[in-house]
Length: 90
Image (cartoon, rainbow, N blue to C red):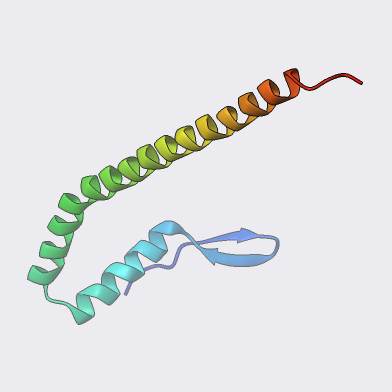
């Protein structure tokens, strides 16, 4: 048996993070062995930095692609400007 912690907002009761974490732990312990949970915890610890690395690499690639695109757009505008410079005013 464990105590439910709730917070009240606007007359409604919501479980706190501590309660949700406790309920998740109880649920996982019911369906998985301790060794499986420990292995999952170790894998999560090892894969967490890898996930951040992949996000960083994706952001770097996005920034490079956006830089290349903006350079192409700038080139188009410069060519347009050069073409307009030689046009007669009348």
